[in-house]
Image (cartoon, rainbow, N blue to C red; front, top):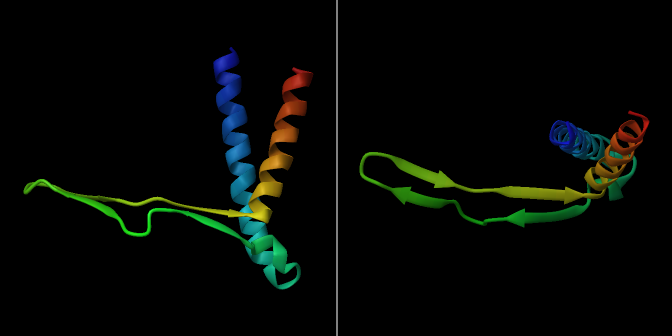
Length: 85
């Protein structure tokens, strides 16, 4: 049962981070610091050409203050819900 609960908490926290980033981007005209952040990732995609299949892989994570606030709020809500059950 704890594995399932762990997955649920993970998705709640992930969803909170996404919502926080979106709200930070929407509210950037009112509170500009919410959209400031750090972009982490690969600058160019890594490519593999196997003559039959060509693949490229790239990942970017944009860490903003709004996303961090959303992560924290979601984690606190998930933790409170976990303690009640």
